[in-house]
Amino acid sequence: MIAEFSIENFFSIKSSQKISFEPTSDVFMSDEYSYEVKEGVRLLKIGIIYGANASGKTNILNAVEFFRMLVLRMPKDRNAKTGVVPFLLDDTSRNERTKMSMTFYINQLKYILSFELDSKRIYSESLVVYESIRPTKLYGRTYEESTDSSIIEFGANLKLSKKGQDAIFGNTINNSSVLAAFGKSNVEKTKLNDVYDYFAMQVKDVLAPGMLLSGYVKKHLDKDKDGELKKFILNFLKASDFNIEDVALHEEEELITPELEQLIQKAPIDDDAKAEMLKKGKITNTELTFTHKAGEKLYDLSEEYESNGTMRFLGMAVILNFLLKKNQFVPIDEVETSIHYELLAYFIKVFLANSDGTSQMLLTTHDINLLNEEFIRRDTIWFTDKDEQGETKVFRLSSLGLHKNLSPYNAYKQGKLVKLPFLGSQYFNLNE
Image (tube, rainbow, N blue to C red; front, side, top):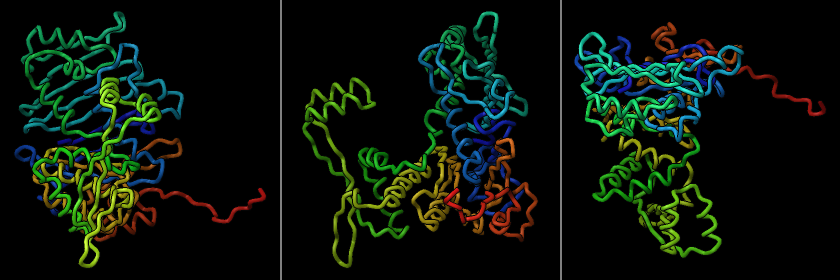
């Protein structure tokens, strides 16, 4: 589980900002909201970020995704850009390095992974583990300007052979992380496997507002040989008051015409997959069919007749299933997209009530109704705000000194928590 994530000099974030899943002393719904990662250490399962448009909410999620990319992705060559974008609204920050650090727990052990980089290279990288109250270095990496190369020092506690160290060192080019190089190296198993696998299998990419998730649902239903996923989806949809009795996949084969061949050739898919598709001479189209009950009769409708909200919530049901059955970290941008507020609240409640593992969600939303809910803990709520210089600042609701008897919803509406957008007159002189 992620305990803390700090960001400095990344897009709209200039000074160091932090998101924490460490709970306050509040004991309200502690069992539902938190999980004990090791004896005496509990972490929150959810974080919810509010803020005006362009205040930097999405940049926080993008920073998590970028951090994951640093861990896993090997650049094409040593001249490729790292992809980092610093704060560009002053003459100093745009020439300074970006810093990122994450504290997380795997198998009851606390790890801290840190990076310092710019668009060309990674200058420093370190990974430490706490097997006791003191940190132990697994590796540290620095940049040697005179040789334009990286120096890596592996800790003895890592128990990595000299051959393994040399293999990782040889694959660590200036714009690649040590962990990404490890992923491409044939070395013996160490704690690096645990860290790499955590980011590869448990930390997911950002779910963006424009994703209706139709393809995502089809992919997982196609793999659902025992029907457990489908059963969960239908139960969740019925409990959410959707008039849907069944969801099924239907496949149809279509011959590849010359026009369709041209589209396939231009499609952003693997060349081998294109060749296999063209060799077969036909493609398979998969469609979702929904069975609705009207009175005593059942009617089948194809996905094209379903609303965006139905398709989005269907995808959210699949995500919820994996959150409850597997240990995952899922960032969702504008989680309320195409979803009624009552469904959003129900989605969060089901996750909190049934999650008994290390799954976490980090959500952004504009729906302030959640601030008026009694079931929401204040240490799960964060606000983003921009100052006059365009810099994103992050605040935790529980740290703003709001009296426990005062409504966060009313305080937010009155601008007592963060600045609300200043709106001018709704009347415009169109002749000007």
